[in-house]
Amino acid sequence: MTFEGGRDNVPALLRAWDIAAEKSGSAIVWIHGPQPVLMVPVDELRQRWERRPMGPLLFELQVRNGPNVILEGLEGIRAVKNVPRLDGVSADLARLFAGWNGAARELVFVRERVEGGNLAARAGAAASSSHLARLWARDEVMRLTSPEIRRIDDAIKLASTYQLVTPVTGAVVLERKEQYEAAGLEPVKAGSVPTIPEPEEWLLMIVVAIVLTWAMLNRRRAWKLS
Image (cartoon, rainbow, N blue to C red; front, top):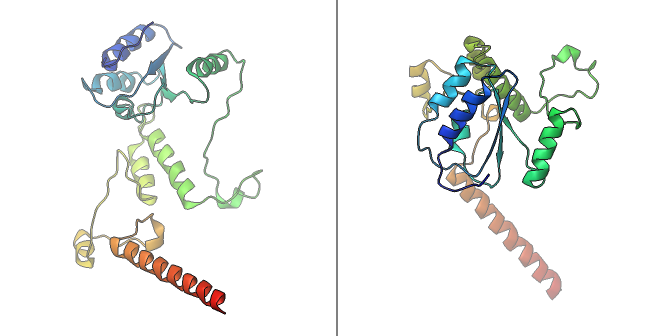
């Protein structure tokens, strides 16, 4: 098999899906480079999994760093799996195939919500940070919106609780109190969402850093003179 640049991967993936779908339990291994642009829409490929959620698994292995707009178009499809890049391509594929045969153990991260009353009973359990809680909530929203589950109302409620932008929820950008009142919304607390310092805050921090540096240098000079 030879690889050439500038090829459209979507038709190849469509053909691979059709071939693999003829037999249950089949899988597709997609070895590819960066996919910076779409030559044809990925909608047709996505629809195949939406119509048949239990269709072939797709294991994607990207050999070089770079964007992948095809994979972005398949976001939320649970059948699409990423092959971790740990060694060379041959070693990574050997590890993947060994996992299929049960000859290798695979370590995975599992984020799970535990109610406060049951926390002490769980070995190794501890209260999570708000960032990890949002990561769990995002994974749960994607699970709830998957074609085989389709609990959209529950997904919207969960995403709204954790203030997430997802395929089923958006964000409202309001600046003044009057705008919040007109929209029937309440401003969120400053510490409840991640924020980026405003330009004037950056300027203030830079000025403070300069003043502190100047004070330290003057103190060192005073020590040397004394």
